[in-house]
Image 1: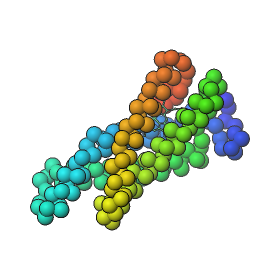
Image 2: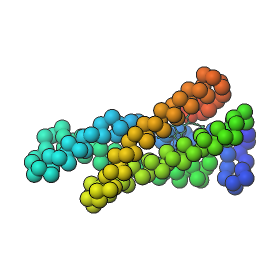
Image 3: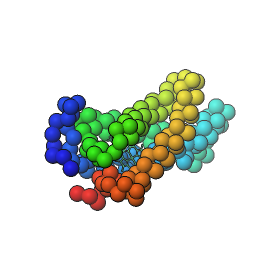
Image 4: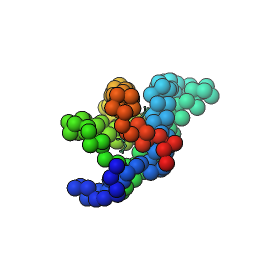
Length: 175
Ligand code: HEM
């Protein structure tokens, strides 16, 4: 594994993710999964409000949780992106084919776009009533599911087929 050294992109390639990067990865992953599982709650809340009725406590709570967890994802993703730019990330294993490295990096870029784009489109739809924004927001759900599935399969492939350290370096136990 390489020492901390400037890469050709003038960004550092540290030998491991920092505890903050690892903590943010898992916190954001948990929040995103919560949003995907309970995402329908905001629709129920919206329907009740549109009908001019008073929402039941659970509908109110789950609807508001969707908004606040979404805002948390946005803030945490921006913090994570800042850390990523400032500190960099460990290099891909040398044995990995360059095309796979490109695919892996593309998935990460797409993840960051989604992590920032999903909350922003949701907020614009809810508070500004921009219909198309709500349509985009809903379309992002299956995109997220496909990306997460690919990402998890890739992590397991690294762990059990390639047997490299890619999975281990994102785990909190490895210090
Ligand atoms: C559910 C939402 C998830 C999102 C949005 C997500 C997103 C990301 C992103 C953007 C990165 C790149 C980090 C960087 O260099 O900036 C990453 C790395 C990583 N993720 Fe996830 N992840 C999720 C779930 C998971 C799960 C469930 C696993 C394990 C099964 C996992 C395993 C990993 C590993 C091992 C890396 C490090 C890869 C490397 O060092 O190149 N992730 N994840």
